[in-house]
Length: 244
Image (cartoon, rainbow, N blue to C red):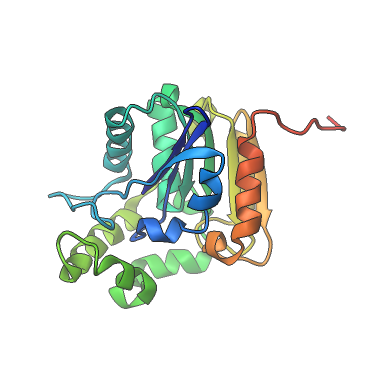
């Protein structure tokens, strides 16, 4: 889901989180980002406190939800920080509405299935509710407007989404105008390091960071390092390279 920080008297920066995640899973990032930015942490349709909607969940309709949210709260431009599914949503917002995006941080997510680890591809086909980390179900149950029993409905929609999407070709990244940070764990089920490097090369203005000794949950495993990388990238003035 999209989380955001937008510039006000300080700066603004929005972000997206992984599937099933409530705002609490971004808890290690929000306070530190809020020291520098006005942070928005909306939860996507069917996630956390946001009601589900009839029909499928797609990256496209979640991107349109994000655009509608930004317009509704009066955010004319913001940095987007997207983790996992949220990274795909953030990228689509940047492609559809470049005027809304200052900088872009894409965390732990390939933009098509070619970037997944082989074991992740195999798991997609046989994934069941029991494979979802219990923590995510525990966070969902007390806050969902539909009650804990609706978890299975959302799971079925997301499982269908993951089996067919994302399918964004690397050539499409050439259209991204926003400066972009690709951040990936060195053992990330959402993207291989090699694919993340290919994304970085495809984007016109981009940087790549690999977080050592972490998994797809790098934001929770090494929050201090992840936060520092994000905040350094969002700084208006970047470190001058000595060797070009």
